[in-house]
Length: 457
Image 1 (tube, rainbow, N blue to C red):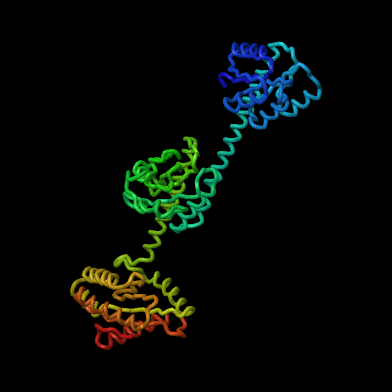
Image 2 (tube, rainbow, N blue to C red; image 1 turned 120 degrees about the vertical axis):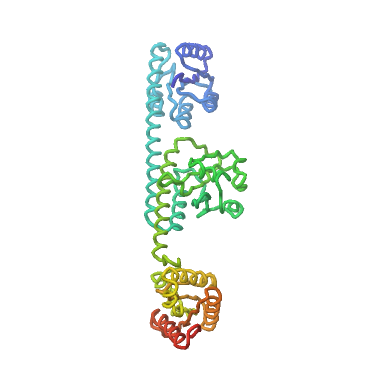
């Protein structure tokens, strides 16, 4: 408070002029008004740290002016001056928030002493209010980080994780956000939209995949820096026509100094942000970035545990999970479910001729042929050794036989070897999924007994 501003409200022009001159000599800025309405208008337009209010004002009395100041400008101090002092008016002035009550005529030194103490009190109250606001802000930020921490501790599933993070952030009021935004995940040098809230297809059309420097999000990916765009920077948001007028906050998500994604959120129109939130955004970026990195590592580990390392096909463990699902769908809802079990004819002889490396290469080739021939809704598993199993959801037995014949012909044509295949479909009364597998295995055995390179079932 280098040069406090004092508002003088008094109907005596000479007194206003005299007080103004004295206060200016003492280093204060001054404003002056002849009645309460003009005084309140000046306060609204220019503000003041302290008001000197005469009780005997024309129109609105001094006590009403005091009440208006304290209602609309609670941090502005007030000293009441009067030539007709009464106990009632002194009590009323004190009750309405006046710092002190001086009776005219007063000594200038006395007035200056009251002004000094009133400004000191006002400064102390202002510092307390600012400290309180800072504590509230810090508590709100810690609460936000705690809520995000709780959200990311509930799951390691990537899809659930990004959705939960986005909803937590748009719910909290420490961030002046609209309930709209998105989370992008870094895939190599590009960003892929992973989850979003309240954004239309028009806005999202250019955002499905973003390269470095392509837009604000691409810039954040390239630099690793938080980007804040004011709500009046419409030209910078041209790639999002429906969001012109909104500000944006783009926070890179980092794990081990690597950007693994980013959060893009829209601020409410008219909101101005400053650098005080930067530490919070950085903490948020690190917290969420580590969670996303952990979820990604978990998914990679989970995927590896369910995949055959040689062929890349789903392994027997994954087969058990999927068989359980399709068997229950068949048993409870009557859905058609079929499986094909197959193996390579004379695979031991092939290994003896070409070695185990040649045998491994054949298995990889066979896996590729099977995958290419089946529908996207089908599952191809490496069952063990040279045996493979194909799961065909929603497929009746005749259609499964046709699919098996296509597989047999494709393998013979493309790999130069033959396979035998057994087909089975769910039948009412089958006790468990193992019965379905046994039926396919029995059909495979019959195909091999019947001369190989054929389909049975």
